[in-house]
Length: 216
Image 1 (cartoon, rainbow, N blue to C red):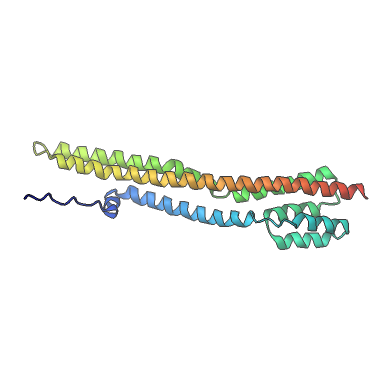
Image 2 (cartoon, helix red, strand yellow):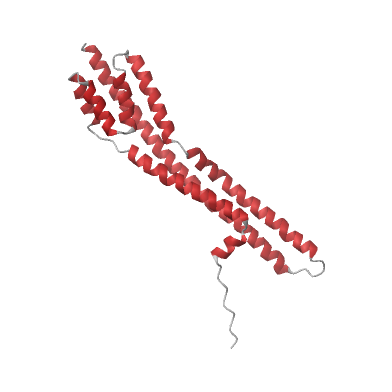
């Protein structure tokens, strides 16, 4: 009985190598994207850890006219919320509107710091598929150029081989882009969560400020 030849498996590494320099660019973008994601994820995880008794402790210190202890407590907490409240405590002798303006400015700075690197991740998500498509186009041009120079000795396998090698860069670009956009949105959701927590904390702190000034 005739036996069919075993189908040759696809070697992912060999395909990636055949993708040429475009694959090196995509690999570099993926490394940058992974670094940004891990670094931002670690930072945001720390920023999202909230002490449920934090504002109560600050309120008690203010009622006891012990603002210095409240500031030291905020300094030791070392979270975006604590740094925002610490700014308000430093300006506690100002009017309520001036205090609100100062802590809003600090909150904006904290959010901006948390968003560091996210534009780069968003750019990777948008650019990677385009770079992959560029590799495919240049690969196709090269394949047809080889066929044009082959004259009458046209080999279909020459064209098909060049095409599938060129398509590798599109696949690579799409993979990098899809992963990057998911990572970007994942981090944006967490930044929004920290921002909402800051807004709620600011509102609670301003209530403490108004109570303090009414009792003066």
